[in-house]
Image (cartoon, rainbow, N blue to C red):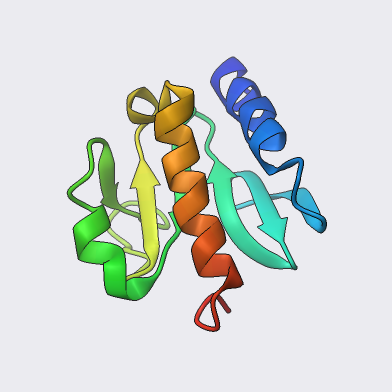
Length: 113
């Protein structure tokens, strides 16, 4: 694990500690955090964040600083509902918390399959 990824993993563990059924596993080339056996976020090797969001909010959420369409390999987009957030855009607790809250809300919704 890179230092950037390790730092982000610890920050995510802290934010998700109150969730009753959280686990983290290696997947997508990163460390994926799951709540209720559904993906919430993933810490990338460069400290970037992969976020599972509601497809209906996808375009709106892409307007946030550092947000971009997630890709599974170069040029292979993951589709609506998957956003990558650059490490520099989640350097503060407030910015990281925003994305975690969006992902958790989606996770708890009936669409968060």
